[in-house]
Length: 230
Length: 50
Image (tube, each protein chain N blue to C red):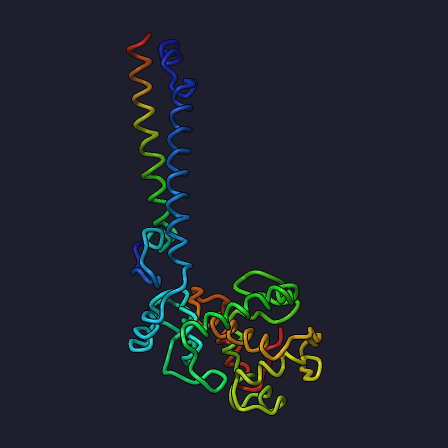
């Protein structure tokens, strides 16, 4: 009996392992190709029409909104359903005192992206999970109350809006020291600073499934007199 | 075990990623079950061939 079983051992049969390996490898290849194309769709920018819908329904329609998102107020609210904070696109608000057309917004965002690469922001900061933690995470920096009305950054830069405060700071960071590590002066021009702020505002509107974690906790902490410095 | 779909943009991979068991069940279905079938198929072949 034992002898017969040995003859019939499937576990020592090469063709069993060959077929299994072929199946697993083949299936994984198909799944990964599918996943790649699925991801491309998930990370593509939405359109202006998506944004209008999002603003009406107070929710994010596409994970990465179109460039014209800079014309809207962006909030970050806890979603009970999803168990983390989600960006909420609200009413329209002027960005640097005007409403940007689709073309203008795209060009500004592109300039901001190029500047962020040219000035190597990621060498110290983190953007969407990429970069360093020497300086604060910039993924949701636009929503940081320090830059908003009543926050210290607007008072320090003598400005009235978040975008102006950020743009002024970026052009001359070493002039506005905070309790955190001082950012060096990178020779960012006025136009480049505008682009960077648009880039940051757009980034804060991306649905990152709650990353970075507990951001609104530090916001609450900040409001009660704590600090957002890392 | 099966939770409400909460991702922003619904997708097949979103469903697979809803809980710790969903991906496991899926991978067992598509990898282990065919291997069990391959096992018995090979056993039959060995029995018939030798």
